[in-house]
Image (cartoon, rainbow, N blue to C red; front, side, top):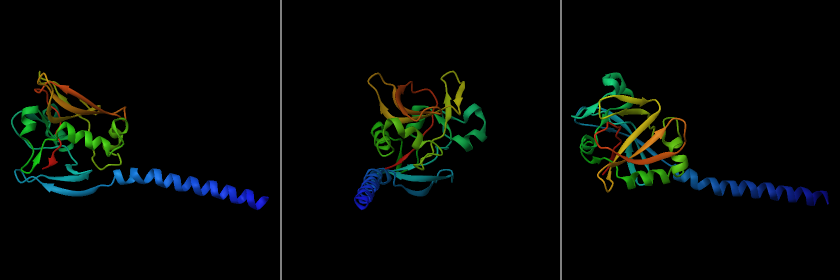
Length: 196
């Protein structure tokens, strides 16, 4: 009887381990990544890259100086840390050759391979498991005021809504969720690029 009880306990423990491995394996596969580097030939800056799902993304905020782009608070040291803030029009032309501003669908795919909308924020922010390293670079308002650095990280997509605003994703320091809204195109927000 004692041997039967021990065997039953062993079977239960083994089943738990097997089920745990089966359930965790897809998550590990989804978070699989390939790291690399990309040099922007226009200014010589080099960026980390990461492959997430079917797309290769730059894993740092773009820091290419163009018209209608700014360092937070007009201080160059913030560009080095957080990249530049671009209007939507500037963002559409900011990525180097063979790279482009991601579509809304690109961000949806990125969310899916990082735990879905409810968990993707934590996985994609700096210090998360993905290697994407989204930073909270704040925004530049249409009146030229800079706000929310360290609290919000807003990223343009190339997709517009029916009233002509542009979709974006934003990260918030206190939440794990990745948010999606559309907003006025003349505000300054961060940019990531995807490989064509």
